[in-house]
Image (cartoon, rainbow, N blue to C red; front, side, top):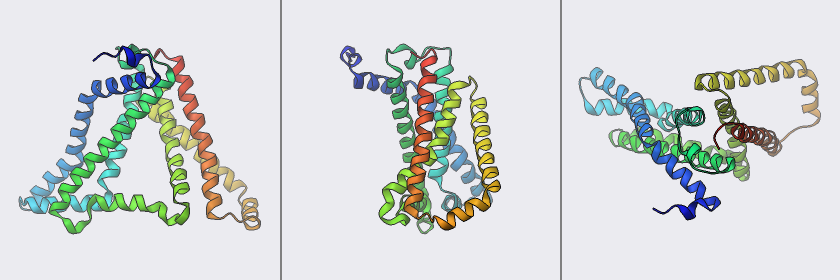
Length: 264
């Protein structure tokens, strides 16, 4: 394939980075999904098979019962997020050449490519969970399976009625700040374990500071809340404003940190 024209355009360079990054990481991605399937489904299935008189149907039902309560998709997404964060750390700090050091592109283009690859990894993970859950639901159709939790997750913001879209944006921005913080720490530290520890310590320090502040000014805050009641839409907009600024600051920090590294 002639890629000379792709190198000359913004979208072309992002496409090349994303495509090359995906195919170069396909083998470890397949290994990761195999490990996830064995740990989350294989071990529980084999254990249930041994403890239920070597009955395949009972083993399927037992595993379906587990994920009716826990949700297979949620565990897959959490595992995939950890994989993505470790992949970012290795992609940036590995001494070996990779697609992000070999292909000429700006820092912004590389960040967009990393974001696209992360979304692709999450979609593949979700598809894997849905396929496995569908197989389990064939053996235990009355359990609801993982699809129950997927539907419940999607319908949760409808509890906000006409504010569904705003509530979804607020919950997404709130959840995103932890991921961006950890990704920023992954860019700062060569070892991924230190990145996870740094992010956890920062989150813990912030939460502890907030609790201490609220406790100290609890009486004043209570009187203010009594005299200035806040309804649901105000809470949503406040969440969007606060975590929108936090997420933007973290993304900016990632951009400038990436700019200082030898990934250009």
